[in-house]
Length: 196
Image (cartoon, rainbow, N blue to C red; front, side, top):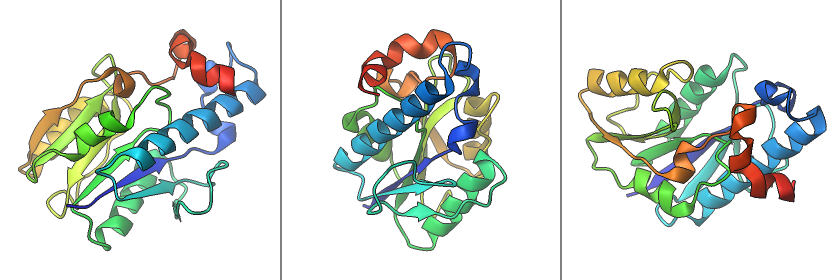
């Protein structure tokens, strides 16, 4: 079985605007870059992930040995949809979409998402079980999965899996649940903040 990971990247100027009251622009940019590097590192260390890809307007300091897929430039969902289409052409058995703002995620947590059965979509919600921080899709069964990142994406992604006749497995773990969106989330990024 082969699994590829796709990590979406926003334009740095657009990243983490909700943290503006707690962090100045340079510190926000440094935090975003440090979290992305952490997520990329975890994906590269995961034994069940054979390839790591980025999708976005730039690679934000990540080395050229990780491919950057073309971003149509219309937001997160079109970018991920485009990346899924590009990946499906190359034939991995599974694709994992993982958010770039998970400072505590580990390779083991990502591996848990990749070992779901071939008829199952594995979803890691945020700690409120409202948003989606990572989603693992079996291919080709989920080749036409429609992404709905944003408000209530966890429920929307479960419904989309069911529309395709696929089972859903929820993966709960601290590193996958704790994304950094609001100032009150910043304590969960202490180590990454110190490094950046």
